[in-house]
Image (cartoon, rainbow, N blue to C red; front, side, top):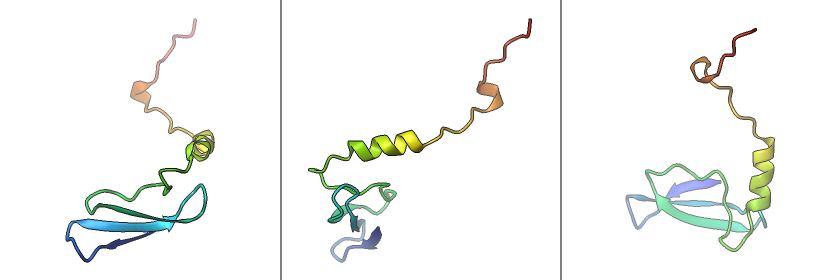
Length: 74
């Protein structure tokens, strides 16, 4: 993924990279104060199978001790 500033605006960036679904080059224009997207895809490409695979592979972080329920041992 390549991010660069456009010549016609001081507040806009262009992001180029391959589509995660079909592999063809994608171009996005976004405000420069926004973070880069995690996935680039065309609006007509179905990205849900790839998102499902990423969610299956992800492990949630452990809860902090203050947010866990403690049971009394009987």
